[in-house]
Each structure stands twice: as structure tokens, then as C-alpha cells.
Image (cartoon, rainbow, N blue to C red; front, side, top):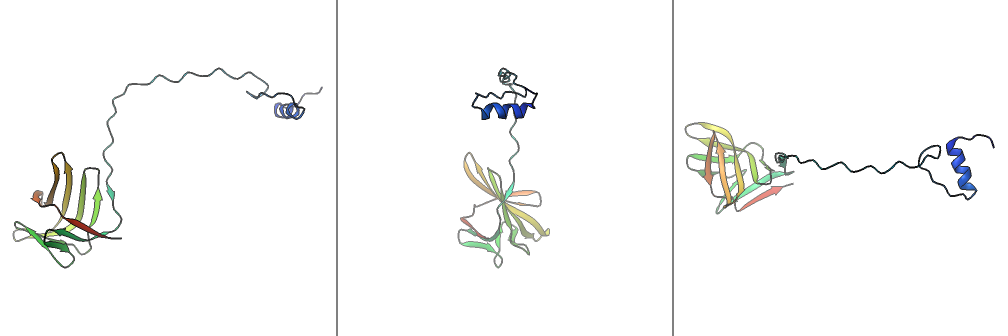
Length: 148
């Protein structure tokens, strides 16, 4: 019998009805199974939460009887908040939602960009107006209407 390539010989044996075991080229026995690597004990720190944006723009924010939208402003203390030239967007992490950019103005500082945060904490929800390095506690919105 003349020498054949391993693949051709294997096909010829299969075609003749012989049992066929292909472990490696040339009929070598299969290698013994390898043991799984031992688990490693490592201190894993969770990655920081990813900030994601909700596609779409905020159409209005309802605070009790007050509405913050393109035509209406809401005041907290000396700060008055309104929509910037474009409606704000909502970004979120598992613990917090942020509505920004919002336009805030005060008699002492003029117009500035600010944001509203809604945080989920152990004691419930807390909301704040973030402006000029200050965090001003505000009532949480009753609803946020989106436009997609």
C-alpha cells in the first residue's frame, strides 16, 4: 500500500466502514485531559458605575403645583431655574439621576449652568439643585416628562 496523507487515509478508512478515531494527525492517541486551573483568591473592586444617558430630552418637570419647562421657571431660595436654550437630558447611574443642563440665575451671580439630582439613598430619595459649587436641597419632582 502506498503512503497517503493523513487526511486522505482517514477518509479512505471511514469510506470502507472502519471505525475512525481522529485525535491528531497521524493517528496519535488523544492527549490526557488537562486539569482546570486552581481558582485564585483575588480582591476585586467593582468598576465605577457607568453613567448612561436616556435618549431624548426632558419636556417638563413637575414639582407639586410648579412646572419647570421651556416656558416656566421654578425658584428655590435665591436661585431661579429654567431650561437652557435646549431642553435638558437625563443621565443616570444605579443610585442617581441627573437632569442637566439647566439654566440657573441669582441676583448676586447672574446666569449659570446647573443641574438637578435625584439620589436613591438608604433613607429614601433626596433631591438637590447643584449650582455654583452649592448643593441646595429641594423637593423631589413628582414627574419628569420626556420627549423622544
